[in-house]
Amino acid sequence: MARRPPTPPPNGPALLAHTMAMLEEVPVGLLLLDAELRPLWFNNEAARACAVWNHGERRAAALRVRSAFRVPGPLLDACHALLATGASTQPAVVSDHARGLHARIRRHTPGAGLPPAFHLQLDYRRPRGDRHRPLSPGAVALLARLSEREREVAMRVREGLRTTEIAAELRRSPLTIKTQLAAIFAKLDVRGRTRVAALLSR
Image 1: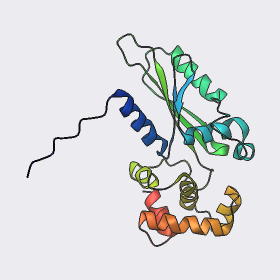
Image 2: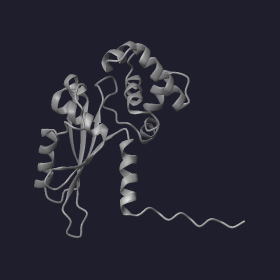
Image 3: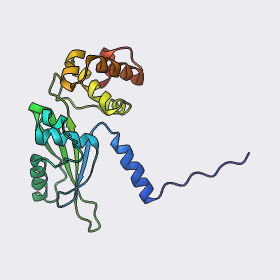
Image 4: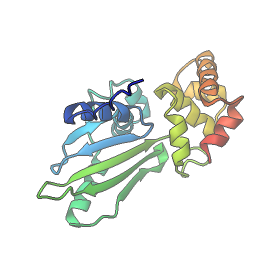
């Protein structure tokens, strides 16, 4: 039986399109700024985090966060500070603990005379319990199996919220939360919320 030749790797534009689609599903906000601090690309998680940073949680919930996107002032200030330090490779960390917002900013210089850019990782979770402990790579991989709305529920399970509290915080019905919990249990192959919290806290 003849073996099929290997599939050639996608070309530049196709690879870029596939990569961007894949990064949309990452359960972490990703934002790329050019040397002039203009947004080059961001995913939905980053748009949501920036909306909360700029407008607060209640108003952000009513916005179409992608169309209303604006880089928050504290993040721009941190980028300016990184520019002023020149070749520093240490990332800057900016936090708004009261609202559970965190950003890790790295200045990246690709070399060969190309201008620098800024890579930002944004995290938005309500401040609860172990809020300040970062997610492990394993927990991020598990969250990647879930939809965006399921991730919101799973993170609140990790932080110890009850179904009624999750429903009130996310402005959904308790029945919707129970349905989403059932989907989370199936996708993560677990029996209950205690196991979800344990897996995401490793």
